[in-house]
Amino acid sequence: MTPQDGRTFWFRDAVVYQIWPASYKDSNNDGIGDIQGIISTLDYVASLGVNTIWLSPMYDSPQIDMGYDISDYQAVYPPYGTLSDMDELIRECHARGIKLILDLVINHTSDQHAWFQESKKDKTNPKRDWYIWRPAKYSATGERRPPNNWRGALNQSAWTWEEHTQEYYLHLFTPQQPDLNWANDECRHTLYRDAIEFWLKRGVNGFRVDTVNLYSKPEGLPDAPITDPNAEWQNGDSVFCNGPRMHEYLQEMGTIFARYDAMTVGELPSTPRVEDVLRYISASRNELSQVFQFDISALGRSPDDFYARSDFSLQQLKEVVERWQRFIEGTDAWPTVFLENHDLPRAISKYASDRPEDITASGKLLALMQVGLTGTLYIYQGQEIGMTNVPRSWGHDEYKDVIAINYYRDAAARGSKETLVKALDDINFHARDNARTPVQWTSAPHGGFSEDPATTPWMRTNDNYTSINVAAQEQDKSSVLAFYRHALAVRKKHDLLGKGEFRLVGREHEKLFMYIKLPQGSSEEEKGERAFVVLNFSSEMQTYTVPEEAGGEEANVVLDSSVDGKRGSLGPWEGRMYIYHT
Ligand code: NOJ
Image 1 (tube, rainbow, N blue to C red):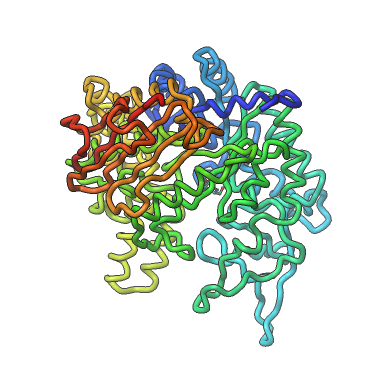
Image 2 (cartoon, rainbow, N blue to C red; image 1 turned 30 degrees about the vertical axis):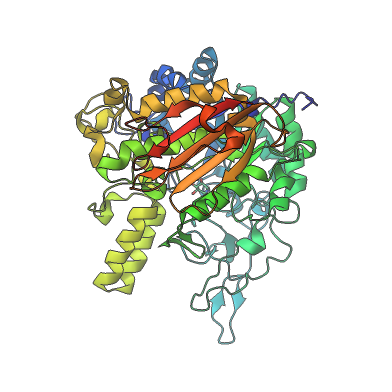
């Protein structure tokens, strides 16, 4: 790729570690993670072999949605620290060769943001048009109704009535997160200046861009199609995702990002078609560096109900991985590789086995699967030590996320004991809280999350911290942590792992996930390096042979998570990677 307009495409070599600040490390014993806590662990982060940090929102916020409701883009949430702590974090990251990207949350603000406070004052306020206000509709019987049938994140209408000015405002997430009106030029350009350039000038290296396809609302805000006839409010993704002016806005932003050689990774929900995804990330279009496409996280989840659980097969997993590995072939676009983030269940619990005896093997298996894949690789805090979902025995009051709380409240309103048990089953599997428990640093009380172990964290630590924690794994050569370090070093050494072409092997196999990697742009027949990865996604022993095109018996093992190292067979949840030069 030839660098144009200052872009070096450095993100193609990035391995990103996501930090979700509230639960990462508490340096001042208030039970909440903070920026100084992050700074104190930067040597640890660097030691993993990652070279970029994505920091989830640390901006000032009333924390209705854990910082995704920003009340000031240029201030830090006081319990996390100050602007000068952020400057120190940027400096300390750079001193270690680590780049830092922030979360850019610009589809909506908090309702406490000064802009919204102005906007709601009166219909002629200069900021009125910065948000999306509409008059009510009235039913035949004169009942006041929202302007359309869109559903918000809490399963209610996406519109809230505001008494003072007698209009509804739109919020695709919670009522405390009003959507900004991107069609207003002044609003949009102020965001570019205050939320984007402000931070780029301070030295950050880019952004993870929240809900990147929602900014441009469709003309006339039409009703969503009725996909759930029993519900009052309907899922509007097909109407409001990827709206008409999306790419115009992103090209405006792209010129700013290019000036700073910034990396961007957009969160791209509800965009299943390859051609639609490519439009966001084709390098020649200069919009985003890459996106998170969510087919993988949709596995096991019903499309219309955030929490309802459904089964999925290994074959489905393989096909999703294959599709989103191969879609860039012959293009100038770049993919991402991720299994976890702050919105998703822990990968071990979802894709492998979190029975205590399987956790170590499962953590390594997923590490092995990921390090062989092409794209920018993302690791979420705690994934590198094999953190798991919270135990099913936890009561509903241990869950702190607004969505979980609301889901349980709705179930309670519906009544029966069975409904509540089922609600807790679903929450336990899917809740965002699973990813949000404090990082397990040591076996001290609460996992050593706060400097003083007597401090109770804002959210309960997963009960398994006594056996799963960083300190214990630092001492153990066979730990998940040691495996991650080794695996990332292997990835760095062999270009075809992070940059090559993916070929699925044994598509029909129900227990083994196997793939070959070829150097980018080469054909199966050409000479060169080959990798072969074999992963046992089952609790039974499996046998396999290394395919001839990947070197057969002559291929060398470079990563092995098995206990007995026996070529040709793998125990429960074990995996192996081979490299061969033809
Ligand atoms: C996606 C974020 O990842 C999630 O945590 C948040 O609730 C919504 N966007 C709204 O900003």
